[in-house]
Length: 177
Ligand code: HEC
Ligand code: HEC
Image (cartoon, rainbow, N blue to C red):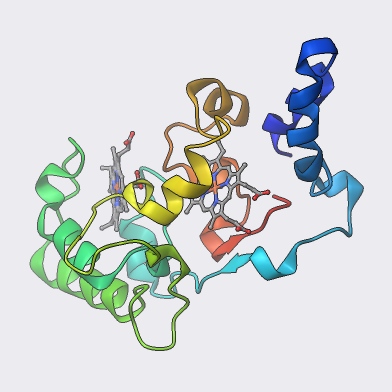
């Protein structure tokens, strides 16, 4: 259950305005059921290659490839020996297989939902999902990923989507998660 909606419970006096902001979120709480803004839900294909699932989910959640464009996956896979400070290097054959799967299912592949690429320059290849303009638009406001919000959700870092979106690895980013 999303902890950030608890803000609503604190609402009193000067905080009443906050309650107004929080109300639409409460409507999406599981416990209240039903009221989904289906049109806004984001659905991406999950990872299907077991090799990717094995190699890319030991330190953090398994990211659906449709979250980044192919050029980002290529850049990320080219730097695995210094992967955000960690060594996540793979042997060449495995790295090639993982790269192939991630790029084949990337956000900019024909037929895929490109919603995560909105506002991203065609020349930009961010290594982080959390650097995407579309991600920042959704999260960097209303303190959704402020340190306190991350702590409440038990998220290890901003890219720990699963802490807040329970079905993130399945590619589902619903308002009610
Ligand atoms: C040895 C541990 C480790 C392995 C294995 C690993 N990662 Fe990571 N990954 C990290 C760390 C550490 C971060 C940065 C976390 C932070 O910012 O606190 C990260 C961050 C990421 C991010 C950025 C998330 C964001 O938006 O902030 C992506 C994308 C990513 N990893 C993809 C992969 C892929 C694809 C693989 C498989 C090839 C992989 N990782 C394997 C440790 C690992
Ligand atoms: C600390 C909690 C938190 C974390 C971590 C987080 N999110 Fe979110 N996310 C939210 C909230 C809150 C919303 C707004 C829900 C709403 O619109 O009602 C949201 C909205 C979204 C949406 C829009 C959904 C829609 O229906 O429009 C997407 C897509 C999304 N997040 C993806 C991600 C991804 C990908 C990650 C990881 C890289 C992530 N989120 C990490 C809390 C989080």
